[in-house]
Each structure stands twice: as C-alpha cells, then as structure tokens.
Image (cartoon, rainbow, N blue to C red; front, side, top):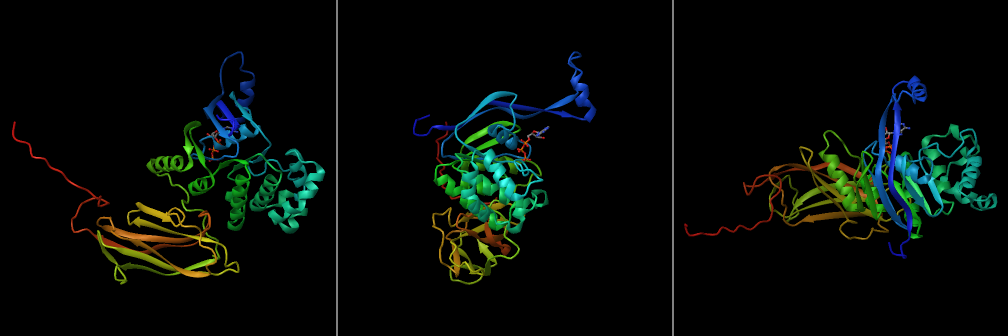
Length: 408
Ligand SMILES: Nc1ncnc2c1ncn2[C@@H]1O[C@H](COP(=O)(O)OP(=O)(O)OP(=O)(O)O)[C@@H](O)[C@H]1O
C-alpha cells in the first residue's frame, strides 16, 4: 500500500460464529456442559476468514444475499461485536449507522439523543451546541424532536440517526441499509450528503441491497457469500458478479436496479411514449436489422424546475428476459439541468433482436441516476420478425469462413 493512500480499515482473517440455541433452556444446559463436552447449539458461521483493506477516502459497498454476513462485518468493524478470531484495525473516527435503534435511548427525546450520540461519537457539548441547528434542519422531524424516540416511526428514526452520523466530522462513515426506511426525498438527501462526504475525503462503508446505489456511490465493492469474501474490486464488476449469481439462484428476486421507486405523487410526468420507424411512423412490428427509435415526453410537476435529470430505457422480452437497459449517465451525458419539459429520443440504428414479443420501460431519474422520479412500465409492446435470419435471442454480427481442404 502506498503512503499516498494510507489504510483506513484493515480486516485480517475475521471469523464470527454465532451459537444458535433451539430452546432457551439449551443455553443454560450449555453452561453446565463444559465437562461433558457436549454442545446444545448449532454454529452459524456469519464470517469466515474475511480479509481486506480499505484505503482512506475510498467508498466501498458491501453486497450479498440476506444472511451473508454484511451486518456482522459492519458491527465487527465498528467494535460493537467481537470476532471469534482475526483482527480489525480502524484508523480514524468512525460514525456508525447500524441497525435502527442502536445508539439511541428509546426513553430520551430526539434532542437528548442527539447530545447523547454526539457525545458517544466524540463531540463535546459545545461542539454539539454549534451543530445542533444543522443536525435538526437536516433531519426535519419538526416537533418530534421534543418527544421520546420510542414514539418515532422508523423513517423519523433514520432521519435523526443519519443526521447525527454525518454531522460529527467522521473519518469513516459506516451505513447499514439505513436509507431503505426513509422516504424518497430523504434518501436523495442522504445520497447527496454521502457523495459530498466522499469528496471531502471521508471513507465510506455502505451496505445496500440496491445494486445501482452501490455502483453509483462506491468505487469498490465487497461481495460476501455465506460469510466468505467472494470478490473485492471495482464496484461495477463486483456488483455484476453478484447479480449474475442472484439471477442464477432459483426463485431469488433481486431489488430495483435503477434506483429507489418513485413517490406516490411523482414530481415529473411522462407522456406520449412512441416506438417509431426510420420515417417517424408508429410501429408495432419490427424486422430484425431495422432502424427504430423510442421517444417520450416529460414535464416537471413540482416547483423546483431546475433539479437536473437523467433518463432511462429498459427493454424486456415477454417471457421476462431483461434484454438491455441504459441511462443517459451510463452513455456519458451530463445530467440535464433547467429542463421543465422536453422530449427524449433513443435511436437504435440496426435493431439486433430476433423473433419474439417485447416491451419497454422508460423512466426519469435524478441527476445521480439513484432515484426514480417517475416511470412508465410495459409500454409500446411490439413483435420482432426475423425472417429466419438466425435463431435465438440476438442476431450476432458475424463473418463465416469455410476453407476448402484437398482430400487427404
Ligand atoms: N445474534 C445472532 N444469533 C445467531 N445468529 C445470528 C445472529 N446475528 C446474525 N446471525 C446469523 O449470522 C448470519 C449473518 O447474519 P447478518 O445479519 O450479518 O447477515 P446480512 O448479510 O447482514 O443479512 P441481511 O441482508 O438479511 O441483513 C445469518 O445466518 C444470521 O442468521
């Protein structure tokens, strides 16, 4: 490791095994069974020999199925759980946002909990006084600030906890799925804040079930499967490897791949979605190799007409095969600012799919591509006729070469 990128977190051969007792009495039996050498529990290997290093200022996402050890790993890093073996060293002030409920006293008011958690995270009373206004403004929970946190909804809880965690000048911010309970507006605010902290050089460790969020926020990702580290590398390729495993697992459905779902009252409206041929005529039947284009109009419904936008298309075959999806961000277009309304057109110069029934999804996302502001699904259904050019899903561009050999 070069001295320019000192290590912020080093985990060496971390292992954690929980004891799972079938009956409460088995715990007691276990206490008295030392001499009999009999065990009354089943071991659950939550972490198994996990080693990695995170550089200072790096954003690392942690992905893996339910129960793969993500939360256990974060708890070990934050020091709230001891591993059975291995070691972890963490350099800098860690601000943990772990399970909802951890760190706050349910009987205390929001205000009291702000002071309590800020103190636990190393801030003096004076320092907290100075930031208090900013913390409560970010959380925006209004009069609930003066009520005991046991009366909070999970969303309010997340708002206050996240706000404290990001206002204590952390060197390392550890976030475990905390965003999933907040509403769309708050999630966007949190993501922006995390990106800002990343820019300031804060190290970020971030568990999310949303692959797109991990790709957008993190440079590297770590993939855990049954407590073992499968892959640690560039976020895009690690997340893709994880998704490929998910899709190959029978009956396992992954979450949204294009950000969080829109609110019930969208801030953008999509209309006039059309699939057109090269001459601009509407299409319901496409021939493989044709030039086609998909277009839709959008209009902002909220007051903030200036928030930059990005655009999305997805193409599905009727049997559910996800053929392709892309965004303006992926294709190198900067977010589109100051656009109260407009029309988006995506051109496909030589449509390569073979016979089948297909449909589209289009969406308008925020400037990071993380939140879906509005979407239209199952639109512009069409059939492809391939004239028996090839069989399968995709007409691969190809060249044949057949050589003539004189008989031996
Ligand atoms: N307190 C506990 N006692 C017994 N087993 C536990 C305990 N906490 C976690 N486990 C087990 O350890 C394994 C890893 O759990 P962990 O919560 O770290 O996974 P995760 O990847 O964070 O899951 P999720 O995505 O569902 O939050 C699971 O098999 C889980 O059942």
